[in-house]
Length: 505
Ligand SMILES: [Zn+2]
Image (tube, rainbow, N blue to C red):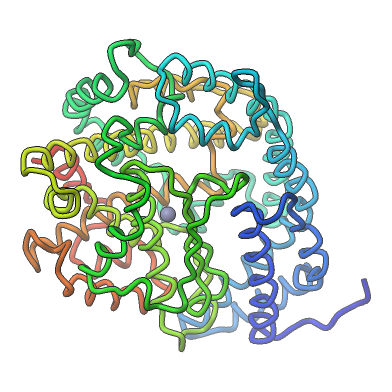
């Protein structure tokens, strides 16, 4: 590589944006199954001059000299982006190898060769309990055969991040980035999780039996999670075919015309290699926002669609006059997850089930109860995950990710489903994403409590909700999740509304 000039912060933002669009589109193509192999490394190589130590220093100097807090924050995010790019460039080749190996991995089930990803998707729709157990074990065994590679990558990333930040402890690095105390958050969440234990036992006792049938073990394995999340036995109420129409209608009632927003590009197609997890890829917000789902039927389709619609509306709704950094780059994901959670929360309103699915009030109550069970299951799972991850990263300098520690115990106790220790690496998203989800859980419950008190019980079909959300979306990615708490009059760690929602107190 020839020597390149160091860019000013504005030139850097422009050049980084061009790279970001390209990388996002590549990620999308693989994710939706348009491409079989990921060539992220080639893209990073083409833009290698963006990610140099000299550029980091230039951005750091600009940051130190900025007196305006917004400008300082913008420069901080650009500098961190540059640093992350240096780390990613180092690891891109190996990350690609792992991603491609996972795409190519096959197992044999019922005499047929099945790609690992397709097998995971199949777990959501296999009606036979014992068959799900069998396939679940095959998936677990094959997936965990990549643990060696995962562990090496985690170690390599940790070393690079230590070198760049001068901070050995991953927890401290993430606390600085998120501007919160992860331990304080975990303590508060542990109490909230404990406060819903009794109600969760009641809900899970009832719904495990209804959803898994009489064969159900005392503690079923997590092979059934996708099946449970679809509320599969209630599937005929929530058919695959209606999910788009109902979700568009649901979002319309909040004051948003999803299909009339040209910036939101919908990908609803079914492709064999398309990941079953719905997602939004905001390639160039607010102009280009991809909303991707793969419908399989069941209430989780509707929930996933609504969740992603919340992200899409946020990114497509940000003020185009904001600097690009405040439209696309955030310190973490805790802010945008508030908006996905609040739109998804509509699916826990009994009235929503009655309105769209021709259910009696009693049936609607019953099904809303099931969605509350799912919510409590996921919340408790994430609270346990955060606790496990804190211990895992505290011990990382010594253990280098060698041990699954209390993963199995914590997750199993929290959910009532047996989480196998072999999943301890695959079940971990980078950068304490679990903490971002959990902050969003707290905040979305605060927000829905705020909307209820401002607009009444029908907040979920009131276009004034849209007006309130629009004002928040316009701020792009600039605010923190905790800033939003302040706007709606809550203490950031007040879990009262969340506990009340999960226990219907
Ligand atoms: Zn999300």
